[in-house]
Image (tube, rainbow, N blue to C red):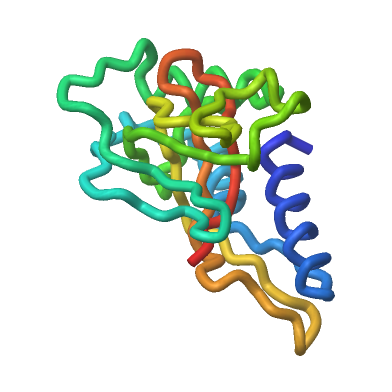
Length: 179
């Protein structure tokens, strides 16, 4: 099982634990990847620049904001994606046709800075996994579905995001967009 699939399952299970229920992930992305592996449709990704700040998770302050004019990442969106897919052991390293790609600045706070957060970026007493880091945001339709009638789902569970460092191609985060 690829790391991306494990992230999706772990994210869904984490939401389920918080909601007191069990979630089953139905990912159109995974279906598209299977179709793509079969018919090998390759396309060059259209990369747009984030034009206004997107709040990925308001509860923790995770945002994806416009990058500076003239931002020049070291890798193309295709190179970053291929590198991450190869690191996961995938032989199909092309961006699926149902994935939207944007370039922007990712901010992902983790909490108050302290001795345990010394390896993270810190600013004004807060530690960050990423602080205005130039990243490619890959998004696709992916809805966790509850198997329990009373389970509470995230407010906007149908957009899954994967953020890759635009200069190194390393995975920064994989998450669902929260309201």
